[in-house]
Length: 385
Image (cartoon, rainbow, N blue to C red; front, side, top):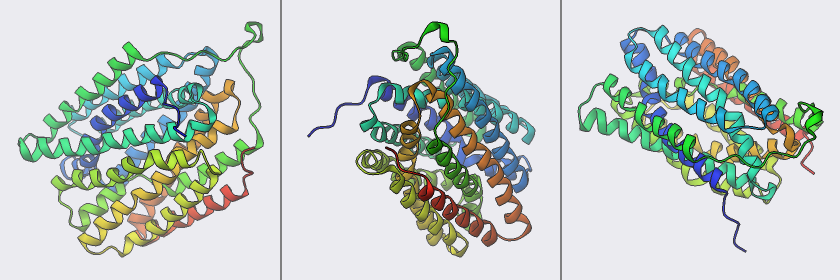
């Protein structure tokens, strides 16, 4: 029996994610090397920039999600978020010292903080429960497609046309700006959840299952430190600066190809099993990175590292949407992103400290152990009814 088509809002948000991520990933694989080789930043500074910017985004995601519930309007937050992301790339291109990169990343993550929870809540608003895994998987697939297009554009601009890093970074402003304009013109709000206007803002008690899910997500976020460290490890393993975008693109090809299917699979089985499979395979692959002493071994591992994300990304968001009432979706996704981002902030700081002060092996093994702890938390959380 044919599955129903995805709603226009889901498709439009997916296309916007593709364009925005193409712009973002045109820059991101080059940024750690630009910071360390051109602007003189240390690995600890790289971790500080990534962790601080992600931490800010996570805090803002909580507030934007809750505010979109109160106003019963999600579009303004989404459009503003994508607009700030486009503006931040011009600031990166103009930066002459690492504190300016920090400022630009904070602006970019402010935009992400404003749009993410309202966007995911809108997807849940317009999508029936039995199709949410597919909808979130589709969104992640297009997001990862952008992460393929961006690095390939970087290779074309840097190697094919011989442009400088700064000129390349300025070009990255264009697709993100188009995405913001497209959403401003064509995105339509769903019908708000009916509510007595005399009741004021909703004060919904989130269920115990949701709290268990957030605990599991936060534990995995501690394991899922910034990928900037993997890019630095790739450079140390012998991947040239010019080829970092190609490696990053290959990693995202896997995510793009399988995210929709894995998300749709979670519509037919208990979503927790997709998380268990994804987080367990993440732990296994992460623990192998310190043993990748050759360029070939590292490239194989880095591409395989995409597989866990295809399994859990769509299922994770659909799981959160399943567990909460409709009038608290924005708030619940805000809490989800807050727990995730603060976990990544702490995890990136821990990974950077272990990586620099102890060894790469200690850092990767710690991440793998935390991922297995998150698997245990998922198994202790009651399934959806």
